[in-house]
Length: 339
Image 1 (cartoon, one colour):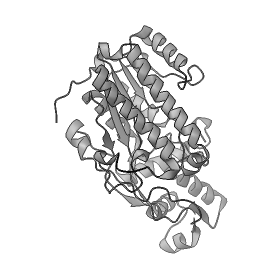
Image 2 (cartoon, rainbow, N blue to C red):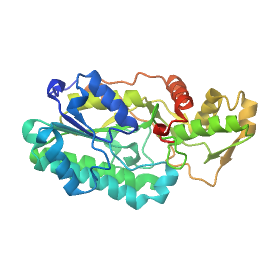
Image 3 (tube, rainbow, N blue to C red):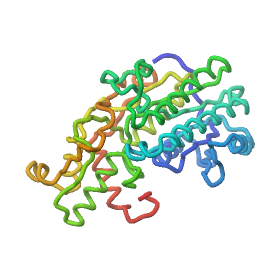
Image 4 (tube, one colour):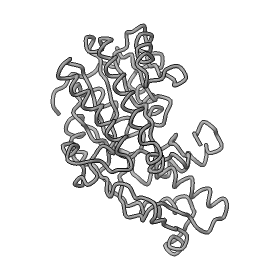
């Protein structure tokens, strides 16, 4: 691996935006596993700080650890599935761009770079061009326009990377930029209006089974492909990059395993018990081809993560799905599961 200045977790005082969210919960657990106790981690809550507003970000940085924090992990985002992106393109661009812009600039104003601090920005593979050669390589990020349904969100996240890169060049600010592929796992968002494909399918299949439904409607044709990363692996990859990188070279986090949406639907239908065999699958799954498929293919080249930070995913896909299904069955009556 190349030589970078490792971050010293024993002296860490960390602000984690979005720390109460899906990935954030697992990042907090990962920090604790690295010896960063909860009293050295601050999770700003939306009721206390509107991170799209400069004054709120300034107040956060002034008050957190009396201004002595030395890492920001920016996970907070406004995001959803294809439907939510189609309904909120302006809001998703503004909110995500404003949060990143104020958090990065105010980190500079508050002197984070002078005390060896790091700003960790999570990106999105929605930033990749619509027809990126598969598997996606980080060097492809500027070779075309993103898939239209989520382009505003993807462009905002890519702009945050460019801001970090510019601040590294001009102000010597240490930045980290990772691009996780589609995440899934415990504490995902299972709200059918705003959730992504795996939690939506899990909930639909389980509730359809409970009702005794004979059919299951699914958006699109099933021809698009995706890659998925278990959330615990994503948190580990992000924190490994946070420790080992001091420059915002984009790093894909994924498994390099591609699956079509049709194959995914069939797998989840079987694992949840909605369908037991191929005949049932063909009879019960109803594809709505009037709905968009989204980007045709998504699969990441993850060689840079191995080479730069020595990281690889550990949880197999079917194992991760079983753990996610079991978690949803156990928690679906709990309001904290973000139903």
